[in-house]
Length: 357
Image 1 (cartoon, rainbow, N blue to C red):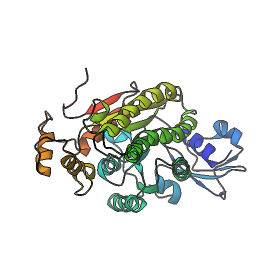
Image 2 (cartoon, helix red, strand yellow; image 1 turned 30 degrees about the vertical axis):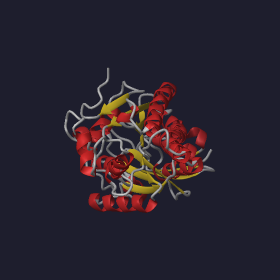
Image 3 (spheres, rainbow, N blue to C red; image 1 turned 90 degrees about the horizontal axis):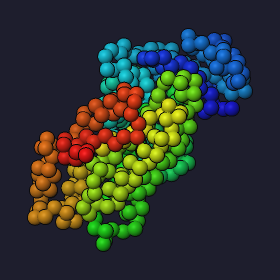
């Protein structure tokens, strides 16, 4: 057994109703609270232990939050009310350096979670993490590289996170791309790019995260962890001249339902959030590659002559007369984590634009 096997088990042993410890892997420690074999950890570990050596594996530092575990310096504020849902938990957000992903990261950090910002843009992820750590005056955000279409990259990301903090409580599969265009002209390369990021990426991330959550949850049959896919309203209804994107999101809902049926035996809930249009994010508003530009150029909006025409067209389709905002998405994510009875669901957050039958 190695640290990747032991750390999640050790972390799972610290779980109680409203708390869990960070477990940081390190070299063998001097004078730890416990020295034992890997096979004896379940029997001998006590929740008050702060340091553990596992023979032939390594040392482990435990604390209420990351700074408490690594530096013996607890800067974590007390959690009250709804903050306790994810306080000092470990969350991962793919595609977290910009757009909806950045908004999710900021919201989770505001609720007290440790958040790994997993992105192909490592510089952007590190910049955001440093900003949030300075604001919160503690180590709570971490930039980490991940290309969700590359299996080795995903495997390394999960392994590195386990080394740093011992496990993952909530994994948010948010990384996504969109290439709009008619089925008569969309290139095979663009179709494959969208499918690989939005569909294959969700599969690869779930594959490696689920094995860690299984180990962590095995020590506590009453504790559940979460895998949450961020899809789109295009996962609930077709999208004109946007087949690659809608198809990948429909497919991700199918994965969600299938994963949910399998992984509930490991106390892992799997759900999807289907947000409406986030008009303020780069996916829509980027002046070169955003959807407003793509839809204007592709003629998707009849009669539109400017980007403003395209935006007004989409706003007028929403009963709430506005796009989805990051705060709306955070509320939905917190609900899915807090509730303990639903799995395999696709939750719309569309301002009434898409209503379930």
